[in-house]
Image 1: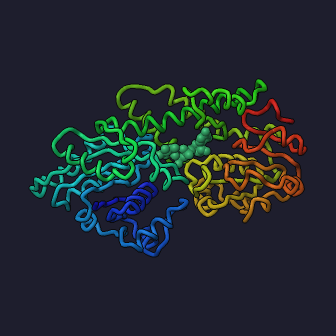
Image 2 (image 1 turned 180 degrees about the horizontal axis):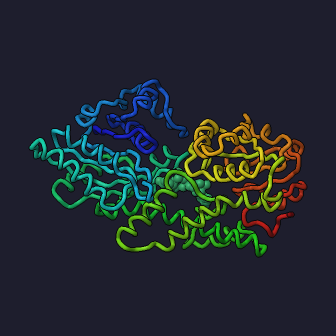
Length: 457
Ligand code: UDX
């Protein structure tokens, strides 16, 4: 099928590459010439395991092209995916300017029936706005070309996006029940047929419900995390091991095991933004989402949990103290630093007078970029960060190690080396990577999240 993808960011590029891999003829459009140049030069502008190979293979086979030519992109695809950014506005609502600009471009150039798919995460009612934007352009040039707007939210996890796309547990598609809507439905069904052959994975629904489903899914997952983080903080107080509790409750099939890991807070491009946007939608309708308000507040506080444990152990003034930090990205297998907990910890430590040595397998360049913004008010503090090429080098003479991201490479370090390179054998583990009993056997002072029962403080 002939597909156009508007936006070669994270979602657009993965969607385009994976649809090309299935044999479709894909045209990827972006307004950013730099991104298009990277893609046409054989690279990819983001870090995502497996993606570069899929892009390269399909480029070589001529199944995917990258361009900034808007008219050509509209002419190409019978199905046009809008996969541009929806960054939060100042008030937390999703900024739709890029989505609507893409819609207007489609309206300006289309000369035959098109299915327009909202792939970006957009609030309820956006499909109607997209429809109006396209209709507005068509009216201006007195065109009566028909089209249908469909909602097909993505559920891709960064770091596992190719796998998630290729092996979806569900595909949510919202269509309206007009004649155009049923044509769109048939085309979407054909497009996703390769995933639907053996199991029915498509959930058909109306457009608004599909838009809402994406927010509901992310809000639910964020809620589970904040719930466990709140319990973990209590567990630390009352001498309970949150990991034992996680196993204990997760084996109830009504609860399940996933997304119950306590830690130093969730980050990334989706959870913080989508929770806020859903709260904002509720406000527009005169409602307050009390649970989600708390989910957000708990998470903001949880990002300070490592800093608070460090202050408790070393005092509020950290002048003369030096810390090692493992992990900067908001989660493993990505260089994404958006809303990463490491940014809060770095701010707390540096502003309290400490120096730090950090290591992250892929996010150090991106970290340098975002930290310049975080420390715009105190740029001299950036000199107190050193970037180590491997985890062990970050440890030298540090008063303690803090772990912020659960990269696989941090899970089984040589603890003799860890101990000999640190000044004090103290670990603050924001992702509960290690067993407190093992740490105590190694004579390492270990501070996990919600594991105080076994902690030797
Ligand atoms: C998320 C959703 O999972 C995905 O379906 C959606 O399309 C986009 O948002 P992503 O942001 O890539 O994906 O990351 P995810 O793996 O879900 O993790 C989000 C954050 O939650 C990370 O910071 C992670 O460390 C944290 N997390 C996750 C926890 O703190 N505890 C958990 O139990 C799980």
